[in-house]
Image 1 (tube, one colour):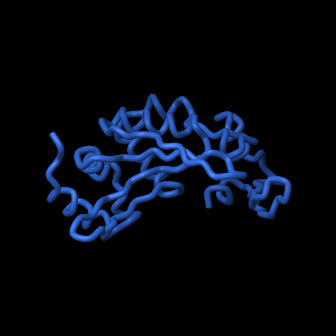
Image 2 (cartoon, helix red, strand yellow):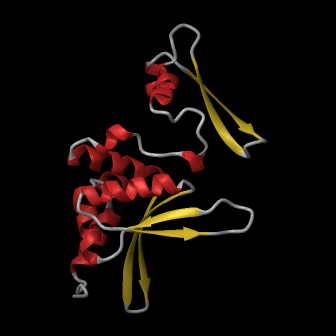
Image 3 (cartoon, one colour):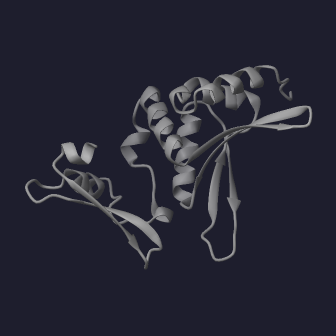
Length: 171
């Protein structure tokens, strides 16, 4: 949508060499502002495992950092509630093949007072996958309060908030 408003045309096709679907932004009448933005942020031409959070994001106020993380989570984040017998758990994590991006996400979470851990998943013939996991009731509650993902996950968030509030934390 933003690409069209900036005068860009979007084409997509399968790239066999990259084994991925790629979007191409082009413009015949105006300079391609999206392409220039990606170049300015040093993200143009980067593969998934090379991605990172641009420097200016770290200098934003906490409210804007929370909005950035909210939208990042909407793309590659996970939120779930699982029931095991009489117990259950809430799972909040963000997955990426970029170790630098995982570290960046973790740093942004810390700036909001939310602690997390990075776990590495390995699978033969695939790049390592890094999962930034928000564990523990206190950190999960902070995450749910500070990141307005209600609009993204609706009822699940309300259920998780009630669920977490009934768990006794380890001291």
